[in-house]
Image (cartoon, rainbow, N blue to C red; front, top):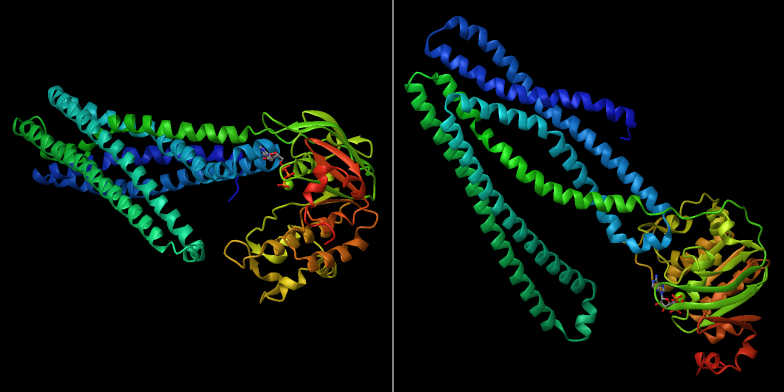
Length: 557
Ligand SMILES: Nc1ncnc2c1ncn2[C@@H]1O[C@H](COP(=O)(O)OP(=O)(O)OP(=O)(O)O)[C@@H](O)[C@H]1O
Ligand SMILES: [Mg+2]
């Protein structure tokens, strides 16, 4: 499907030729029919014999050129959509993390599946075909002027009135359709929520509340749909009656012209056939303005997505060693989250990172992995500024199990490997270490069972095990567990810790945890409080009131 740019340029010529041919033959075919009618009414057999084969040929070209033109134009459009989507995905995946997360996943999806097709449809269906269609319409208007300027003027004025009426009704129809769409969306969301959490409704004995809510939304949706049908009727009325009145007017004026001997019966037929084209210039103008508005919005969104700055990456390799945060200041917006954080973690050291919820623990990890940049201060690994290290290398050597492990729809194997190519033996070892063998027991197709959306739902603890397996498989030098075992029961946590203990020798381990039982085992603890970090032992830190308060009631468990 992918095409080269040069081929797309080359495609423009055949597209133009077929569009031109289709318009010429659209006019030529009824003109030939008109000649044939005139030849038959005057019993002119030789003209009939001459025109008929030409008419056959013309009809054939007309029949072929329209679908061929629309196919070639479609091919042109689909390829533009394909390559632009690829470009957006490329920019998005290489984009600066904070810019990408501000832009939002919903926006990303709507640019890909709506804005790009809308913009290129406008470009190909409206702008590209416009000159051909306008030329055809103006030619017909010119012919009408030749019969009677007064009559042509009358038709044009009538065309303007009908087009305006049709446009106003269409606009109202669009508003009504939007209203109906919104009402339908609310109803769907309500039903989805009801079907996802029936147990909450039952447990709270709230069936009547949900039923009433459903009735209200259902009534609104019906009301909005009826309004939409009413306006759709108006649009049809103007479009149909417009075409009929035009036909009657041509019949009247053309009939008089024919009786006066100005035109033949065949030409009257011709005018009747091409008459509706008188509307086209107004219709094109109005729909061009409307579509331009829609597609310019789409273009702006596509362009802003293509303009997402690329993540800045250094080019240096990995030297490893001491991780050092030096006077780091960071804020997401107005308030400082980190206010001059300084600490170091030695190579091979195992530390716990502790702090209240919202203190900035995950933020510290985000800065180390360069998802965000600190406003002040430096982060170094082995004496090297993280900004100088190649991003792929940095994130490859520092493995992180996040707080919320995202599961993609696909098999469990795909979710663990995430594109890695490893032998079964190594995979099995990791599966045992992360405790995934316990998930496999209940999955009928084992590792090849589909999980995530539309597959087996994994519990919070099971998702965490998948997250741990992903990191173990990548054998990073620095390992960060961001509350990666918070959803595991104490026994599973202990088992995983035992397995990892051996594997973790020689690797730097930073474990973000809230539990007393997890923290007390670490030889040193980083305590993040009010935007600063204190590094000490658990016992020493227990002298600090705020630290002690975090474990209230847990001591000794
Ligand atoms: N992307 C973001 N945009 C704006 N503010 C954010 C963002 N991420 C986190 N914050 C804010 O920064 C502060 C620190 O958040 P962070 O996630 O680092 O806390 P945490 O210590 O990991 O908390 P928890 O223990 O609950 O996971 C919080 O006040 C949070 O609301
Ligand atoms: Mg966190």
